[in-house]
Length: 146
Length: 137
Image 1 (cartoon, rainbow over the protein chains, first blue to last red):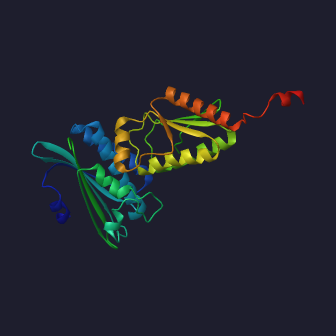
Image 2 (cartoon, rainbow over the protein chains, first blue to last red; image 1 turned 90 degrees about the vertical axis):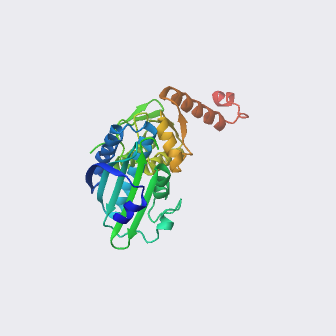
């Protein structure tokens, strides 16, 4: 966890919230929670939509490949900028080849393989760590005016 | 269990998505729509997504699938009312939703559907064929 945070811009965390996601039905309340936080820091509508879409992609990955997990929602600040940082942790089988998984059009499932690379394009910062047999952790950050 | 209602209006099926989509709901809609097209012989589907705040790669794919599947059953699909932020996000995500027709609002979508159906009708009738023969028989 420390390692991941170091790779992402140094920020101050203002507010934290944990949310377990185990079933398909948990996705909508989670997306709403993200929206709530984004509205609170006055994130613009386009950025909000991008963040929610990125979150939706990652939460699906977590459910489908990781068998569910937990999401940490944080409001972070860097200087005058506010942003939302989401950390998705699962205890699934992990990703064997992250470089491959980050390529457009690659999927081990039946999807289009846009999830991870597409998500990266939608947010300001993106980091993924995975250990085979232990699980996967994805961190994304979107600035309110980013 | 939630379900998105499908309304039949003449030759068309109308769907207004007023709730937040999750995967199961989108999959059910896809199956229901294809079944309804086959059952009613509808010529067009109009999907209003003006109340949908996010469309991710999965839902985008379902919308694309509905377009392709209904085309196989001889029906056209028009997606209307997409929010600008959703359009921006879809393109950046890498999913430009090719294969479905789009229109700005329900009214324009209906016009487009009517036009599409007329055009295909004309294509299918052979201009050389003389209809007066039918009557005399």
